[in-house]
Length: 172
Image (tube, rainbow, N blue to C red; front, side, top):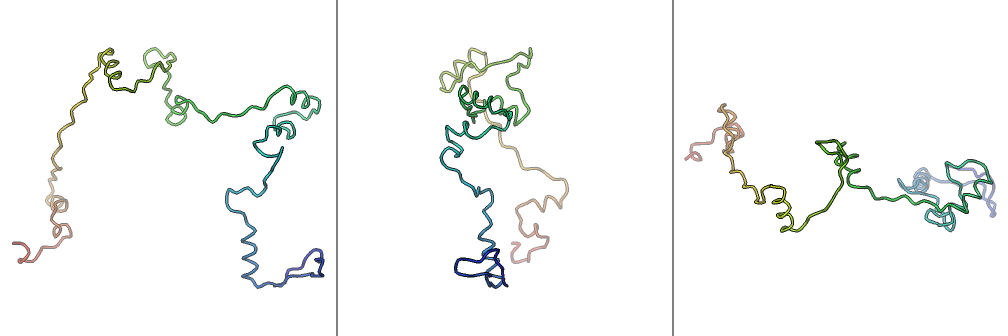
């Protein structure tokens, strides 16, 4: 396969001869990995540069150059915080407003976070709640199936599970 070049190289090459596999290998090498940026900026054009806001216009700014110069001198660039309050996360994830009082509908706020055992017990006693750990329920029996077929299939007998009767020598 012959690929003609737009302009000849300095050594006079005007075309490149390749077999199909070599062409595919070169094309695959030119394709970037998924979610990988192929252009990298450095200096004031870098993403975390403090001077970037003075050079690169924001998307929401008007195209008035005089207003842009005044804003750049007075306003510091805002950095978006990655912190989300737990109440907003709960509302976003589960559509539950945890700050709304169930009785009056007013706004609630977090007063304290109790983590130590003795403080938790004291707080529960103050509220009139039980402080002892609830006992575990007793284990229940395995289910009883009225159908003998289902009973046989759910029992521990491997021969009955696969539907054949064992020989007399194994049954004893």
